[in-house]
Image (cartoon, rainbow, N blue to C red; front, side, top):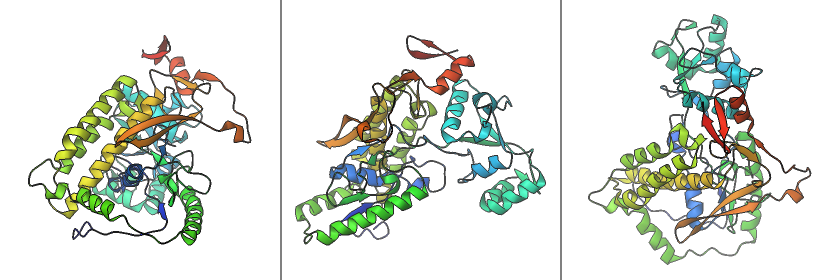
Length: 406
């Protein structure tokens, strides 16, 4: 209990995990609470995880300096456009047809390429919107518009200047593998929503609701047939000691300091949004140092800090899972890699899977069961479409199978 420090044991015949996702405590509303606790708990309990390297969308996009949540679709829908630091509407070259409506994945590609070219910061320009459009935004997104008004970005029914915009952080989703009944690899543990691996449940509220309905029914059937529940007292004693370990220290490192170190390792755009092995290995080394040399010295002042301490432990584990899985997939698919620019259906119609092995991460590669699919997939290998476009635009060239920047 984060308020009074009570240790509580919950006895359950069946458990449904519904605690995705992980955002490394980014700027978006709710992301400070989206700390991968369920992934970490399931991993430590022995569950099989998968999919961190290929989340449905690598990230989302919000204002860079204001705590405003989703709504970009409405801003774009009313006529907002993206401008780079040179004042160029750059989405016209990356997707001439859809431009800003190209979808989050393609916006990720464009933003990261613009950053690599030195064309940041990037702005959402809504100064061109009509007063009618601004009034509609006030009706649909009142909290966002009130914040813009409070800092002078909106005066009356006009935007006064462009608003700096950015990707908020790489999305980490090392979700639990599950079958169509949403049973995981651990008997009695079921999964729903974005707590599941991306290949099991797509992102979003509709998928969470439908998977939750099935997982709940399956868990109820399991609990109905299960025998009496008996807790392992030695395990409970061990877990209690682990829970309060950082609270019992009189000196040590504060959780916020370690959290900042995790963020500095993994949040830069060219670690997990635009990937290359040498940068990811450098980040992984930093995360391993945090794991081995900082977490054992972490100190919590009170139960509230203890909650934060556990979040930091979990984010460190999620960061390691994220990086190791990303390094293992040597191709460009959902996310661009400079050192492996091809989308490879010859070698990489596979899943990267993680399990615990003596408190460390053990990876394995599993073939996607294509023979069970109603459609057939061609075993082709081709340059990722965004790298093709970047090469055509003269932004990059290929040299010995790797991307080189013009």
